[in-house]
Image (cartoon, rainbow, N blue to C red; front, top):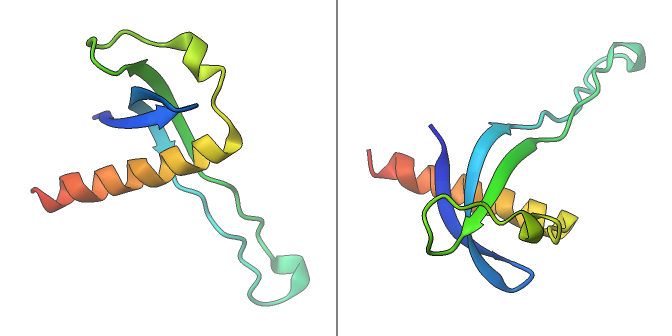
Length: 88
């Protein structure tokens, strides 16, 4: 199941279709140093779609996505998931 939500990138309205999300894992530093497990960051794969035209991708806008945009889009995605779960 993919989730689509409205957002903006570079001030331009669009919709975001999340195709894959893998939550990150913090490092496990309990115990001895040599037993520590490294963590990994979350991964969010998405497509930007036109704000009002079906599933038409906006590839030129995807090139404008910054690291800050990616972090914000992940937060918006998690909020959209939480809202959809609240409706169940």
